[in-house]
Length: 225
Image 1 (cartoon, rainbow, N blue to C red):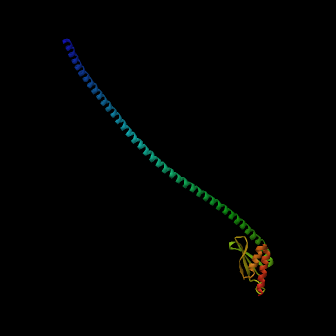
Image 2 (image 1 turned 30 degrees about the vertical axis):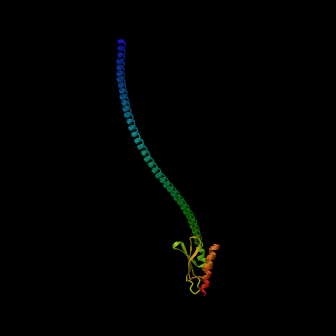
Image 3 (image 1 turned 120 degrees about the horizontal axis):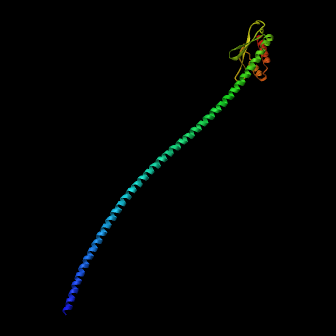
């Protein structure tokens, strides 16, 4: 009985010591695990905090880069608009230059035509003056006519031996070639009522000899009035 009692007592002490030992170990393990978790959490917190800061910096850089791109885009758009305006002005200037060149060419062509016409008229006028000059001697001998070249390429015709009372009395008219290349009587002394009709007939027939003869007849008829 004593041995049984002793055994029971030993068993109680064993379980008491075992429980104490187990509880202490559990507490130590729990404390170590808690410390490990705490350290792990702190490490992760520090890591993620650093990462978040890096991401914030990255976001700021991205935003800054986006702003820079936006500014560059605005600058490019402004330059493109300016370039478009410059191209438009250049096109307008080219069109104006073309129109000016065309106008100058038209003026040159018109001037050349006028010069050709004027040259042709001058040539015709010279021919008429030469023709008149060639028959000067004939008229003087047959009709008592004297011809003089005066200013502005005009010819003055002086008739004598018309007035039987005063044979030396001059009857005269002045003839020129106008811009149209036609004969034109610029003066007549004494005046003849038929001078316009005789001038028109000369232009129609170009018969200068008949024109001079008809004026002499008109002067002669006038001398008898």
